[in-house]
Amino acid sequence: MTSGKRAGSTRASVWLAAEPAPKRKAEPAERKQGEGQEPKPGALDRRRIVEATVRLLDADGLAKFSMRRLADELDVTAMSVYWYVDSKDDLLEFALDQVSGEMVVPDPAAGAADWRDQLRALAVEYRNMLVAHPWVPVLLGRYLNIGPRSMAFSDAILAVMRRSGVPKEGLTGALSAVFQFVYGFSAVEGQFRERCRGTGLTEDEYYRQVVASVSERPDFAEQHSEALAMSKDLTEMTLAEARERDFDFALDTVIAGIEVMRDRAGAVRDRAAAGRS
Image (tube, rainbow, N blue to C red; front, side, top):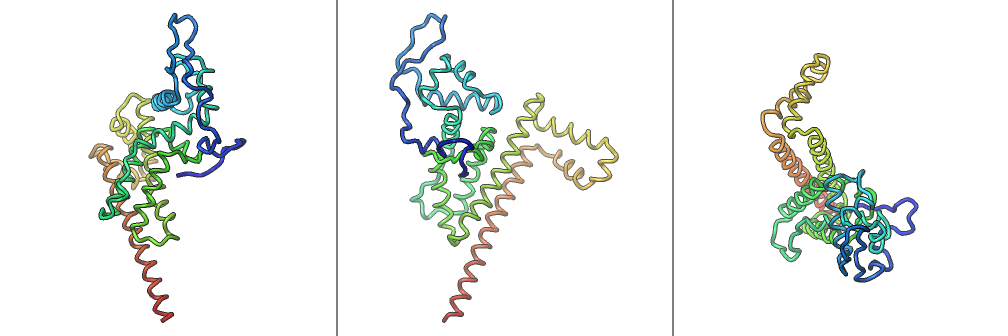
């Protein structure tokens, strides 16, 4: 969960608004003139608007998203949308929380479950969501992200981490180690996939072309032989396989590090207690 306040905004988040409900209830969707269709009462609501927003963001990206494009997608006038959301920023916050609901969280009552397994599962859910929606990483640095779905995920993370035995002063650091790693890994993964999609090539085709082009440059090959050797090694498997291998290893390394730091903090406490006795 990221914190921050939008520049020039009079409130920190749409979720802190005094009245989050739409300005009117069951208002008919205002269809464009010339269609010859009667408006249907209740055809437009916030849920439908947010779902369409997510579809457009997934298809076209954040840079191309606009309220006019959204209105075209919904087949309504642009002003119709503003009956249900005050601004584009508010709508993006709603979209951010909408996709956060895709992440499956563990049962907090499952106290016998291994916290490491649950933490891994949460990290995988977070990664899958970020990769499926490449526009999300940008918004996480722009909005508070305190919607109900986002907070349910945050609460689950905290519940799992508290069971790890990490002292309270280390909780945020441990969480940052895991989820900032996942954020960075997934943001790069998502952007690379978008780049490949734009070229019309598969990830493996694109990567092999890049490696071949670099290999043809003697100056680069000589100065960066280690990097080139590693890049060539990756062509011996699919990028998807390499990515899964690297993600799993890195995540296990982070979790192992959390255990080491937890035990170190416990040893310090024990020595301090022994010194007082």
